[in-house]
Length: 137
Image 1 (tube, rainbow, N blue to C red):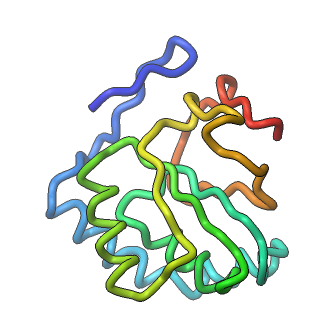
Image 2: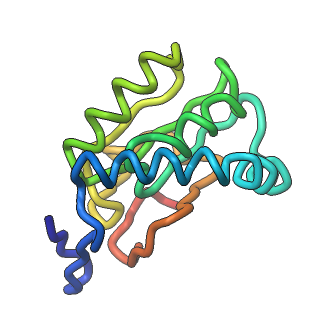
């Protein structure tokens, strides 16, 4: 799946198959402690609203949902429908009610889609051109 953003086409080289989803889940488990430490040191905490660009199968979004707690909110942005389906199922199985996933590309976000500006915008493994993003932040 290619996405057009600012006249540049982006492809996720490793694809969106189940084997890649499983690899991403294993990778996320290995680096979760460092990722959590980084987010906390960056000031992400309870009650915040966080946008996760390139949320994939939801590992970072779910980690963030635990950090921001029930009074916070996490919105994962992902362009692949199968990844979103997997992320939604995993978040539901984990009982996380403060995380949702938006089927879009970062270049297509507008203030009417994203609502209240987030306190933080994270992207652990994504490369993107956000020139087209218009959320007022």
